[in-house]
Length: 345
Image (cartoon, helix red, strand yellow):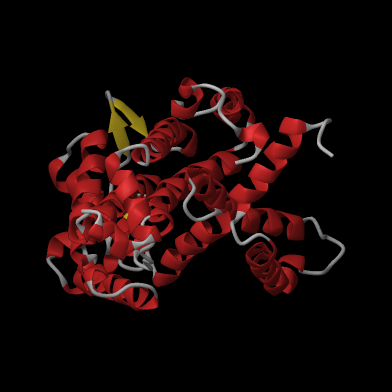
């Protein structure tokens, strides 16, 4: 630890946020509250999508970043949450909050089942095992009971809370942002508990952790369940956002998207999951916007679309090459610089 980062009192060591972080959080909350009143419909739409991705990426970060278990099935677990919400809305009519909790619970159970191979394999072998979740669940959605809608999927009514209907992005923003903040804070607090520390011990030295009395079976399955719970809640939010759930809504590439967000943002950090989700969601849109302004090129959107994809891929590779710890580490460097500036040599 650097001298500038050392804690001076026990209260500082136990605090979830430093005084600097507290000031940043106040500014962030103020910005989140004011944002929808000044942004247009498109950017509010994008912010809702970012909120969904942050919840799912945070869940995957619990599993991959903190427990060291690679999963390429996050989108599949999101689909479980989305279908759960759609079925409850259409056939039961239960409240919005209950549906999201149910979506998380069902996804947690499914995730724990698909997490069983983690007891015997890890690394790329485990990643391949989790890919099976996408294919198995897709087969169930297409060929399963009629309640799942088959290839046509399910169309659902908008979210309702306290008698109000939330259908537009501006309205859904006020539901999604508090849920996202609550999810992130819960994840941050998780790693101050015995469970979170057990996850980290398994990631660092699983055999040593077992020798110290940490049951690998219990905590690996619990990590899968927690990660899938977050995915299920994110999938439920996704269902309320788009209001159409089909077997094709959550392809395998979507799981790769979340894994890339964890890596680019910074594995094993809550901030990394947030920054990674924002980067993976917003940067392609900014590149698309930049291309649209190139009116001097005939049919610029169609002509430069491959280049836009290449630039986005190059940015990801650049982060892996020059800062393998991700955007979170870049933010730490910036914070340390200004923390000691102008006295930094």
